[in-house]
Image 1 (cartoon, one colour):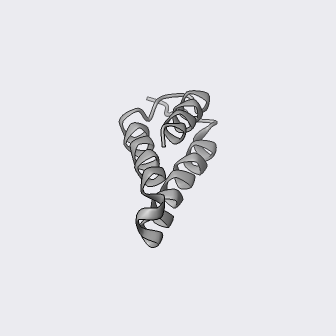
Image 2 (cartoon, rainbow, N blue to C red):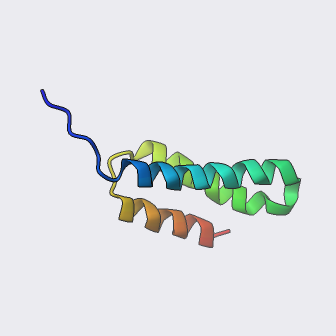
Length: 69
């Protein structure tokens, strides 16, 4: 069985990193960014539950989660 590399892998990881960074910053600053952290964490949960989505789908979900906050 041949394994095919995901051409969007690094772009997806960059999006994941951005969300993780938002969560980390919010934890450092406390309650001032709690809503953004909640949105970023919701995206990270979504990202982990749906690893096979395209970069466009993940980006749309990221923006949707961040707009809710």
